[in-house]
Length: 377
Image (tube, rainbow, N blue to C red; front, side):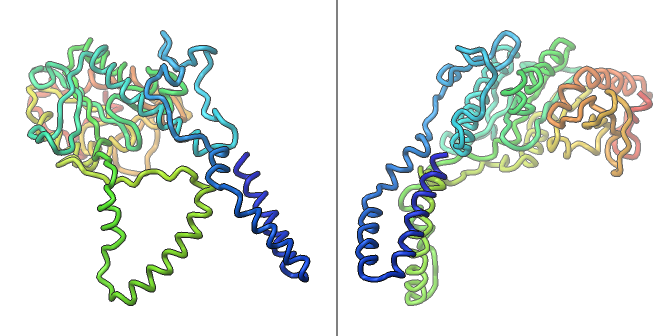
């Protein structure tokens, strides 16, 4: 609201100035007076009224929210669900606030994985030095030694991290529907070892030094005269851009650079690394995967079933135009809820698949040509 008001004030003044400049000497005096008025407007102060500082609490309690006994995020004082539009007409600020809360929730889920699910945090790469960027996964104590069954959990892409299916569900619904915790607890109860992948943790962000910022702007091998003309044009352009940037983005954020994690710089690299160093080294005779959204692309060649968003009842066969996994309905039309809604059916599928495998005379590696069809189970 304030942003539009501020811009409208300046636009009105500019229009009046344009009209006055077309007049005689008296109008020119008025123009000079208006210019003087404009020079006294402190844009920085004006913008401070438009957008509050991007400074947010670093704890749930600081946000005045807590997860209740049902795993729902609720306001400590009012008991109401999370409100995104905390400040009207300040979408950017509200989004930054939402992201800050999301980072706190990510750390909260990590704590639950260790305290409630009794998983251990394992650093990646396994031979990482003290100074290099690192990632991590979570594992049960028996993940590599369990001789019978191993469950591997993989989330989709985006802002989610290990232990999460969807941040939006965690914030707006509850922990059960938005996290992998129900899967982990059920798996441990049924005698599975567990590995929780973290495929979106691919780099760390560090603030650029002044020297790095200067180097990025001066790294040109053009002739001096041409570069000088180009710099002059860029300075003028930057001056105009910065003027309007004070309205769009009044709080200039720090410049950062990404330092990628060795052998884990993408979701695909991460999946391969965990396979090579952990999953393939496990003692489990049966390894099963639950992969949500993008996380499932790496495993469509294995014996699988794909629970997809659909208006059909749970487990109803759904026709597919692609020759990938057999598809059945997850019992929901919301993509982010598919992992939660299909939760009971998935463990039934695992049990039947393992039984079918163990009853075979000669187990073979399951590929697209010879995988067990869902309908046969």
